[in-house]
Image 1 (cartoon, rainbow over the protein chains, first blue to last red):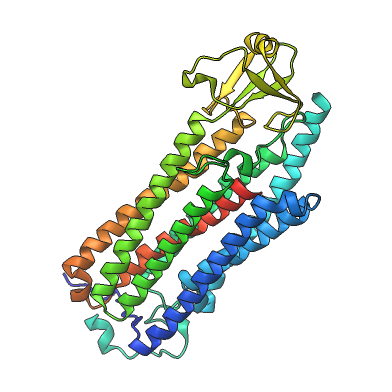
Image 2: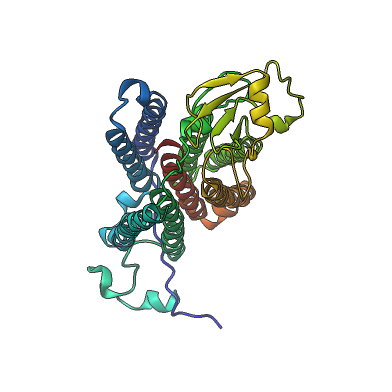
Amino acid sequence: MERDDIIEYSLNAGHSEEQGRVIRKKIYFVTILLSVITTLEVALGVFWTQFFPNAWHWVKWAFIVMTLVKASYIVMTFMHLGDERKNIRSMILIPYFLFLMYMVFILIWEAGYVHMVLSTLL
Amino acid sequence: MTGEASKSISNTLPWDGGRSPFSLSYGKLMIWFFLVSDALTFTGLLVAYGFARHALAPGMEWPVGELVFNTFPGVSGPAPLMYVALMTFILIISSVTMVLAVEAGHRMDKKGVVKWLFLTVLGGLFFLGSQAYEWTHFIHGSHARVTLADGRIAHLASNPHHGESIDPATFSMTLGNSYTVGGGEVVSGPEAYKLYESAISVVSGANMTENEYGPPSYANFFFFITGFHGFHVTTGVILNIVVLSMALKGVFHRRGHYEMVEKAGLYWHFVDLVWVFVFTFFYLV
């Protein structure tokens, strides 16, 4: 039996040659950006003890910020989420970030407590 | 479809029915939901890793990435983080070739899709090979941590289990107050060898219960997180090979769109995304 209650969404995602050229330009830009950030990260990881021996706190935050920049470019450009509708973007990012904040809170709070207990015991 | 075509549906608002409110096809929406749940799994793993590290008992030290991962095939001297940087670069480039395959698919360019997908599969295989090298090196180890009879810790520059017999006259080891490798007083000669012989334990390489680098949980998390990521890469390579063969057969061209390449691409980018975080939290921080 042929069903007529299923809607086949024919979403035209195709694009022309000229549009393709613009999109490829963006892809190459993100490629260079990601490579440069990765190189910076590795250079910082190898040389920070020589150049900023007392700035581990800042180096750590620099790593985290660079990682988040890389991740957002991958998600927004490569995974195309930046060009999707706002509702799907929020639906994916907001629940995830709420959960993430909770997890990071538990990590810092509870691990700090466990460390304190271990310090008293040992 | 015939039923819908005969109805007139207002398409002015996304929620009026008759079309996707997200302007996404069913398949893409579902792969996004899967990726969110998979992201939560990896978040859980990395948070557990952070927990173990942050709660570490006093007297223990977490290993430093630059000192653990400092070899490069064909290079004799130390090359801190170089190999893992190469792995990261390979994965990023394979992500780029994937997004180029998706772009070619949007232009119905079958040749382009096949070319870029093939390069993506190649990049994935290179990454897996690199990870095999990394694991082998991590498990075999390059030096050894010795716990001496008086409780002090010393480090050997080479792995004593590799079979070469040790000559007491030229034997030397670095005494350190540190749990991991660190500069300390170097003792050598037969006296030092005597100390070494009466040692409580000599740990070289890594397994599930002990490792030369640091606390046991370090190697456990390394195996689980990079292993689970490697499993995802393997799955991604298999998916890409399937999609590549379908593209070669012209299945997508007959279908009129290359959406399957987009779906496989979303998964492949996600694998790259996870590696970006694993790279930061395992090797850099």
